Image (tube, rainbow, N blue to C red; front, side, top):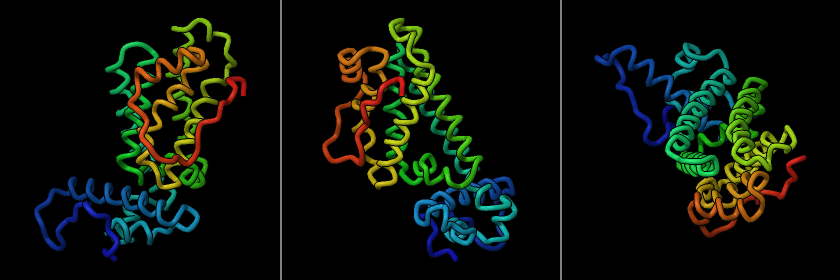
Length: 240
């Protein structure tokens, strides 16, 4: 049962102990969220079972059902926790930057670094998690719309962009998410920080023009790292 527990995951002592019930609950729930995330990576959602989750989490099936009614519910909780943490990371980065273009770059840098540091949780933001059901898909859509709002603020700071098609921001975000997801699913999430200049330029071009976006990206993002990537962002028209 416990042979595949994730390295570094805390183990509660067996038998009688003096750990507070609230701490036990928190530990078990955290282990289950980590377990379903690892199982998603190794099995894919179509093959994922409750047994996979509890094996990775190092808890019993009985414990699993004390917290979740299904694998879908457990995965949704894992997504919510990961999304909240990712948004907190991005918002903290945005709050430390001055100017819209700098905020976009800061968020990209923080998010790319965050995903690269935890590639297993990064799988929760890919199409592999989306097939878990409509609730995860709806969460991903809501996150995309929330990210699009950050880009939409660029219309106020750059009047030349005010006539962009209404779907511009959501299209940009969804294309970016597809690229990031391709790299995560290809096992090269650690390369995401090196893509930040390219990604920033892609997002900023509809607002700043080609030369302006290139200059802004160079100023706000770290230099690209060498190596191949799973895909490159396409030059997609804002009207797409």
